[in-house]
Image 1 (cartoon, rainbow, N blue to C red):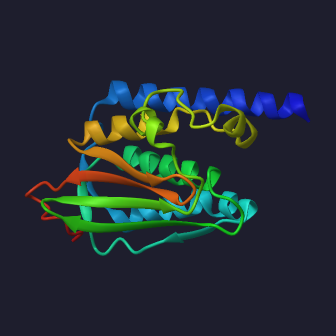
Image 2: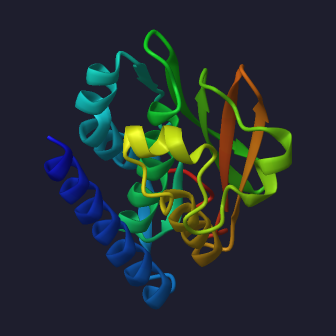
Length: 189
């Protein structure tokens, strides 16, 4: 019961901390051409069950043939953390959608949810380590609060940025923007 879930949360926090330190230390890490459909496939595999259990529809779009030069593990981790976060803050019957598009020299990965949204006053703080929108609520859902800090680091490591657009009570859209290296022209070969 309580003891187990507490132990589980501590272990999840440690995993997140390890991941965060690996990403911070690793800088850009291994650079290769990473296709978004491969990233999306891994993210889907990681979260299909969690979403199903939570009663949330997880819709992961096609990668549209898009690719970036970067660290595959970090990119999977970033999108995973956004999906994890979105599923946690979305009620049963809601939807989390992931899609990719090319936009002005960058690719944009959007994770949209129909969840609780983020109060306007809190929006600037969501990417800080250990920040949680609603402490009582996220303890119940088991968030470590480190996920979005990880996402921001991955974005920085790839010369990109992450932003959020949210309406309280209507949901949030997190956008991870990564500049496209001229070499790849943003398409997987």
